[in-house]
Image 1 (spheres, rainbow, N blue to C red):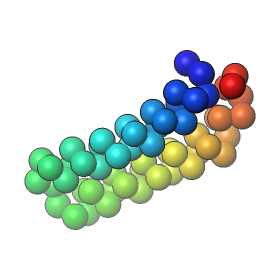
Image 2: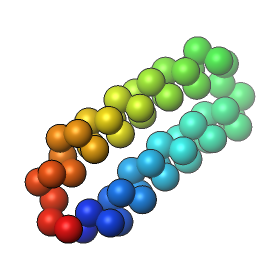
Image 3: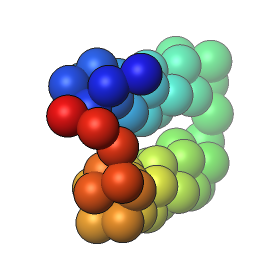
Image 4: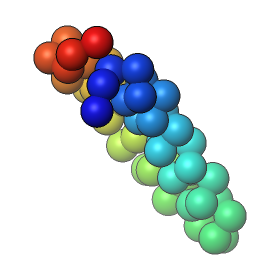
Length: 55
């Protein structure tokens, strides 16, 4: 995979996870935890992993 696809795919997976969690009737704390873990993962990707991937 190249960097352009991952730059779109990583946040898209995060958005889909939040939407699916809220659609299936999860409580606010569960959606909040999914959002927190996803935000940390996106931050880690853009801060650390993205540098090592070919453009």
